[in-house]
Length: 129
Image (cartoon, rainbow, N blue to C red; front, side):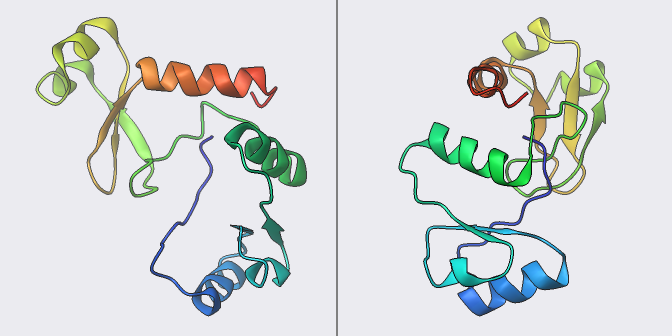
């Protein structure tokens, strides 16, 4: 949905709580002990749609196309001119899109393909756009 997010499965509960406090983040967790931290939300729902609704309701989050981040490293995405994208994306993606982005940290390239459209459709059905 474009929000600045940290996910590191190697962090223990203490490190997660410290990072959340230091960077004024909230914690989403299925761990009942970690959920006792201030600002944490225990995710009890099993399916993704219910989880998305719970988080969005609790924190007032909506998808914002102006806030886009890398799904791999959370880096900020910057515009990538179409001609520069040509050698970096599949031919079909290049031919069917005029707008591309590149992660400022890991250099992954993005465009509004079927995956983006599927996510957007799911969020629209949940009234999260």
